[in-house]
Structures are given as structure tokens and as C-alpha cells.
Image (tube, rainbow, N blue to C red; front, side, top):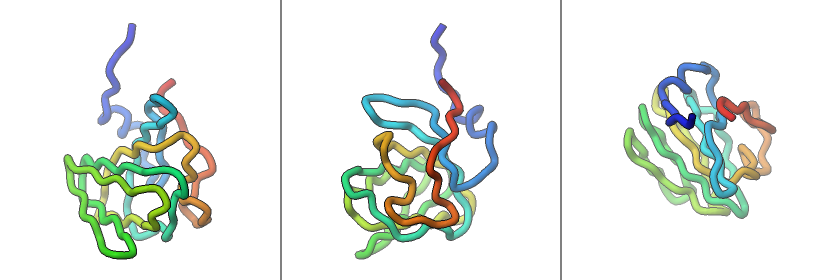
Length: 123
């Protein structure tokens, strides 16, 4: 029998940061949960994909070359394709990423947080 996905239960299943976890897929998009802490994200862009950050807890700074967007609980921001950006959490942040399944974690830039694949929490 189908059941709804409980976000808190899924977040409780992992503690690692900067390592998105797939919790759903639809129309070629993946829904990923992520915990963030510390200033670790390099400047990068996704050449052909938009990327949406929906924040559940904490505040995320999305740095763009022409300014910073603050995203708090219950808010989201979509980084358009090809826009260079980096994200900086203020403290501990929990969020949901919505992006095409073929989106490279940190674009063409490789760093200590770059993931080549993602753990899947639910089938």
C-alpha cells in the first residue's frame, strides 16, 4: 500500500552533511534531502539545469556573482541554469533539492564535497 514520505523520519536516517540523499523522483527530476553545515561549497554552475533549494530548517545564503539571496525556513530559491553560485549555510541547515537526475553535484568543479553518486533512502 502506498504511503506518504515523512521528511523527519528520512532526515533521521543520516547525519552526514553535503551529501544529498534521494527520496523521490518525478518527470526526470530528483527530490533530495540534504543537511548542510560549514562553508565548503565551491563556486560552480550547472550549464543546462535549474536547481531549486527549499529550506526546512536554518538559513541558507545562496551567493551569486551579483549578490546574496537569503533563504529561510519555508522559503525556496531557484538558481537558473548556467548561473554561477555557491551556497553557505548559517549554522545547521536542512533542505530539499529539486533538480534533474543528471545534475552534477558541483557542476564541473571538483572539491571535497563533490559527490559522483547519491544514496537512495527510498525505492
